[in-house]
Each structure stands twice: as C-alpha cells, then as structure tokens.
Image (cartoon, rainbow, N blue to C red; front, side, top):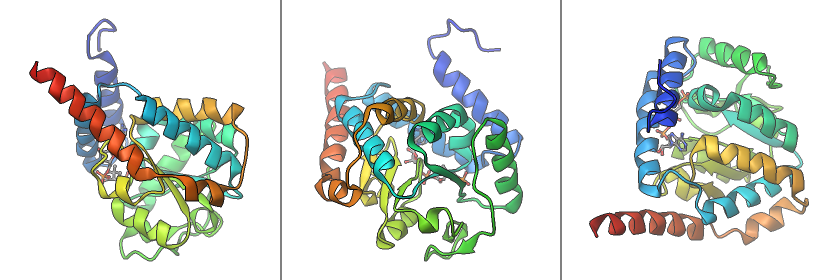
Length: 243
Ligand code: PTJ
C-alpha cells in the first residue's frame, strides 16, 4: 500500500500499476525498463508539461480531429498506464484504437484488447497482416486500422516502425519523453511529455480545436523546434542544479 502523502506517490503508483500489468501479461517485462528510461527523462524536464509540449499537444489534437482515419496505436505500457485517458481521447477525437505490440504474441494482443474493451474503449479487431514493411512483430497491423490510417498516434514507440509509417506517407504523432530517441526524430510531431499528462491535455484540446487539412498542417510542423525546446528545458534544469 503506497501512502498518499509519499512525495513520490504518482511515480510509485505508476510503477505498481506497470508491475501488476506485467504480472497480468499486459505489459512486457521489457516495458518495465522502458518506463524507467522515461522516468529519468521526466526528472530532467521537471515532471511537468512545458509550454512547448502544450503547444505540440494542441497541434496533435487538431491533427487527430482533422484526420480522415485517425488511429491510436496502443502497446502494453500505454494500456497499463493510461486506459481511461485513451478512452477519453477516443471519444473526443473519434479515433480508432488498434493494439499493436513490439514484443508481440497473440495472447498479449487478446489480453490487452479484452482489458481495453473492459475500460470502455472500442478496440479494432480482425486478421493482422504484414502491411508495414518491417520484419518483426510491428510489421503486422490491421487492414482497417493502422494500414488505412492517414494520422497515427503511436505513444512510446520504437524508431523503426515510426520511420516505416512515415515512409508509407502517414502523419505520425508520438509521445516520447526522450527527445534524442530515433522515434522522436522520425515522427511528424513529437510530444515530449509524460503519457498520462499528454493524453488528457490532447483530449481537452480536441473539444475546442477547429479542423483543417491535415496534410497542410503537417507541412507546417517544425518538429526539430519541439525537440530543441525540450532539450533546452532539460539543459536549463541541469544548469540550475549546478548553482
Ligand atoms: O508492449 P510492447 O510489447 O509493444 O512494448 C512496449 C515498449 C515500450 C517496451 C516498446 O515499445 C519499446 O521498447 O519502446 P522503447 O524503444 O523503449 O521506447 C519507449 C520510449 O518511450 C523511450 O524513449 C522512453 O523514454 C519513452 N517513455 C517511457 N515511458 C514513458 C515514455 N514517454 C512518455 N511517457 C512515459 N510514461
């Protein structure tokens, strides 16, 4: 039992949730280490949403509500940490939700889909096909889901798939606390913020955003600006810590 007045309460609860999800076969064991990397970068950015990330979240919301076929790709960590927030974002954006895993087994796909459905999320189902040009499990996706999407949100992603989706002509939005990662550099738009802060901010923005042409919006996005601002925020925190 984690005491609510513990100074690291939020972080301890997230860890406990992920550990439980790993025991239940939802999160992968590798997902636990990926979370640790995310926490380290969150420390560096001050465990807050920077103004630059807030701007990226608004842009992402606008892309999602403007898309012809928006899809949210959900992996084990995202399901474990943020199922209610995914449900709210699905409602606000009208996006389809596809379970898509790096450490892929049919059993995990089933377990995560059942868990998300139980949380009120409408989850795509069907026969996965190798429609993303990648040799590992992430090449498999749903013809009516990621394969047909024009805008894909891929939180906590791996760089290869992000790059492959871009090569397929899709607009790719990621949420990744590491602004140096390949994913962060390959995406059309990177939100450098913690998943459970970013998703509710996007949902709120969806309700008030005005739709436009996603292709035109994407052309105007300067993702390197968002990455530079995140790195600058981290550098400032480290510099201040030296004083
Ligand atoms: O469930 P699976 O099998 O699909 O596997 C999921 C993981 C996350 C294990 C898989 O996609 C993976 O290995 O991802 P990476 O390559 O470790 O990338 C995850 C990125 O997300 C890293 O750059 C982390 O810093 C970042 N990250 C981790 N936790 C969070 C995060 N970013 C935002 N919020 C978080 N909570």
